[in-house]
Length: 128
Image (spheres, rainbow, N blue to C red):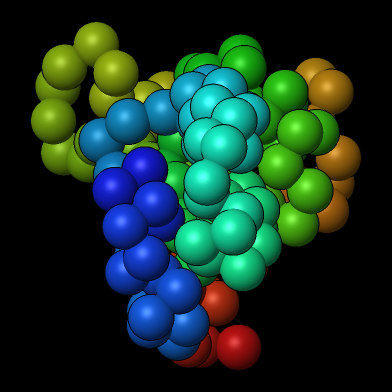
């Protein structure tokens, strides 16, 4: 993500959308802050690096408690849910009800839950 932003790829291709999967959402607030600390980034890019996150989608796990913090920090987020279906590894949540886990998550607004469960993915693939 840092390379795509700081090297100018997202600036040069403003319609490009990128989705990062098999990760989590917890690192996003930290990365936004870290990229904005680059003393030359805003001058080179014409805006703060965090502003390019409008072109980035991040897949989160339904069991990820830090999801509520990522939603609060990344206003207008592009977070989506990942289930690791059909893997049987410890991060797989599809058997336990990925949708249920998100819907029951405390501290996440109903609007953010709907975005995570489908609205953001629909925007990523141009389905809205």
